[in-house]
Image 1 (cartoon, rainbow, N blue to C red):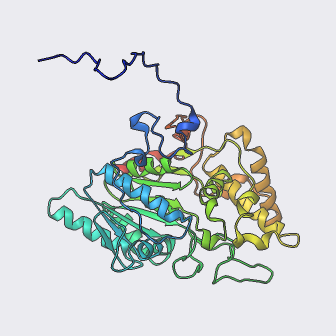
Image 2: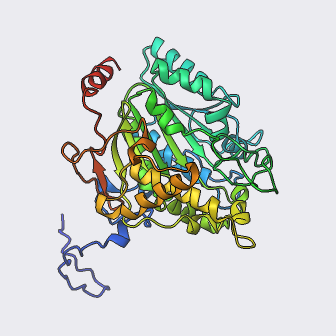
Image 3: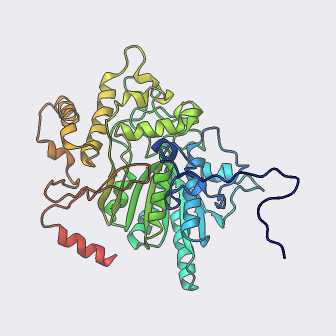
Length: 421
């Protein structure tokens, strides 16, 4: 038996050189802009950086160019499959996601997948979870639907699922209208946004003020084990939250903002950018909650004026024509500022301007000024003495843990409620 010395006849000898130490990885190579992030530590990498990823929603579907829902669904379901080691069933409500992914007789899904009616995805998922439990199976169930099938048509079954604390993760892909049937207004359509069923002209075009539902807060009111919001602007954050949700048993809810170029009247290349602006302006706060209490929020370094988010979208074009509707823009800004204060998205010393802006608007609207805290009736109180600061960093974001603390006298009651769940 001969020993290979590494030198072979007919081939030039290769000089052995020392392998240099691994260079320091820069943030831009692994941050939220770097989807693959193969340079990051293995435990911090995106699901999509794994060559053995599940490709739950594979190629061949017929989503529009720049579809935020297709992007969000792929990341969410791949993460859920990894978290359950492929032991999972997906229930899909009627809507864009179902239509573009399963044109008869084809499908782009590579996982166990079931189509439900428009408004009963939560009910079907509850039945599937009950059947698996009766059979002694550990198979997990994930339900998904758009904002129409979630906050409107499917609202009753979803609330029932929350109340019973059924072991289902429900993911809502919110594009803020019924996009599949022609961009009709839904309960998630923002004020002043034009749709096919809102006032096109007149003194107050677009969706009316005071309508709609804040579905994540409604889910929190049920005090279910886990509620979170996310966007397709930070896909690693979405992956983290789906993985986190699968660590709980009982009812869980994730609300994902997914811009729609067709319905929003935006460029297909701006999907991720608009989702990021929705977060940076405070219009769409990103946070986590457990048993009805906020546990972490995505902090804003410097809030962006809402105009930067509104202008690229044709559904808001009427706000900027012929001098624009400054009053409507000011009201939208006030709502964003209220979110910033409610969820403590910026440090207190940076919030003076936003607070004053909101109070001035309310004074002009109601004709008098009342204590600012009254505007947040029912919101969780923030106290410097009891709130704790922590960081979760995966090259993506900094989280402020323990951002919400219950009012004096409520703590014991909340603890008892958590024990029951």
